[in-house]
Image 1 (cartoon, one colour):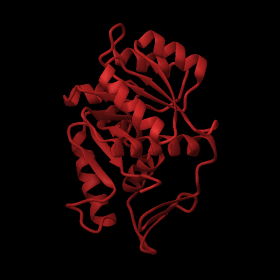
Image 2: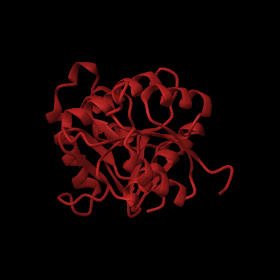
Image 3: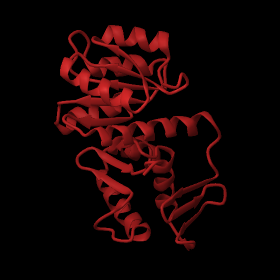
Image 4: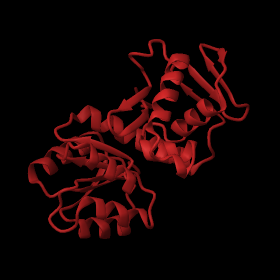
Length: 234
């Protein structure tokens, strides 16, 4: 195993899930450190500086939401929540607390690996300069020139549509809650105006997607928010 392969911190107290994740992650070449409680996970995060944190919400000491909040006080490490909690409000709370992504158990190894690749790619972009040109399938966005192209044909967006798209690009691959998007695009006074989002996301899909009813990258997370689907390795 390569010594410079990314380090994953797994905070999980269920033995069977830990075993599945250990086999999966190490089988894909990742280094792994494990913690069975929230407190131990926080200590490992501080001492080992992992590249990604996989976090269960149902821990024996601290709730995973509290672990997320504490981590976000000092670290920007991507946090992917892995939880059996399926309720929309649980997902929204986790994402609003600072988690980057949310996977509901059970999930496939392939889906987990894709989400980890996205998280690592996002951190790499954050560490360096924002790429002046964003490319995803047949979509190309020149952020410096504020131009958007589909199949090399320029698409004209309204200022709000463009701002919404650039927020999604900045968080590519991450689920962004309705509140987060409304705050960034329209401001804090509009965090409850979810209909604004629905209208503008519909407009964006009609301009950018081949089939707006079956989007390839402007994805809806029902009851939670939206995600620009972006997997650098397909």
